[in-house]
Length: 329
Image (cartoon, rainbow, N blue to C red; front, side, top):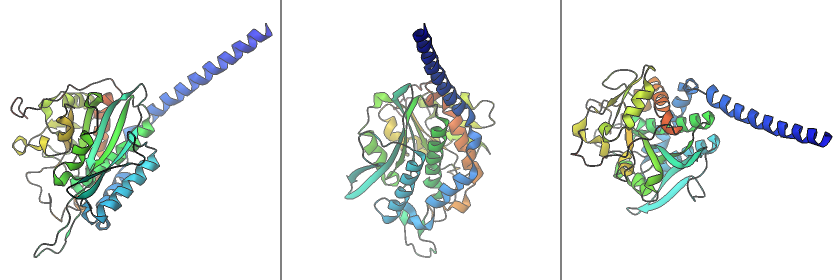
């Protein structure tokens, strides 16, 4: 009898411990909310990546090396794993006689770890350009795309602390976007697209969109139901997602989402940029001081909330429609 009671007690102890751990994980995910995404962290990432020290982050230069080291340091601090069979956060490759590297960190999923969601932004820009009658030669690329890379870093920390991602999240800072989507193209060559559920690309989120504060727009909105899922999840939050208002500019195919979309992955780009009137786009004047840190912060929060059901495995976007003439942007 004593042996039976001891066995029962041990079993109860194990069960109690298991329940306690499960409860702790549940409390962890419930306790960490988007309100924990604060503007001071956003500002730190933005002003570091867009500083003169980074020399415009042109692919193949010492400036982009400094940016990569900063991103790697943040991935390590957050606790992300390396991607696939890589031994570091860098995915190295050679192209156009240059040594290039994407910076990739992984947050492993829980129940659906073999299903992947990419959260990305490009960390390269135009570097240093000496033009006649130009006093500032450093193209800092604050909005394009230090703001998007800032979002990647901030979301990596958010989802790691949240701890309820059922699917594996692959956080990527792409290189060579300004040279023709080189980094994302290389990344796409090495993935099994059937296992990739969505691509969440973020580019130029530092200014209020043409729709006003607390709004963003999504490229290729009608090419999958990804945008509809985001809109549904944002209902009641005060933040609104719109379809891309600049269809004639073909923006769906001009950012890194396109490299994954061409594989059939529902991959789209979030942006707030009023690109038709933005005086700083691809100018040396694209500096951190011209951006609204609050706009970036609120947009990151909206992306976190809007993509939550994709991250936790409850929603799976339809595969993307590639033909540019089949559906209207």
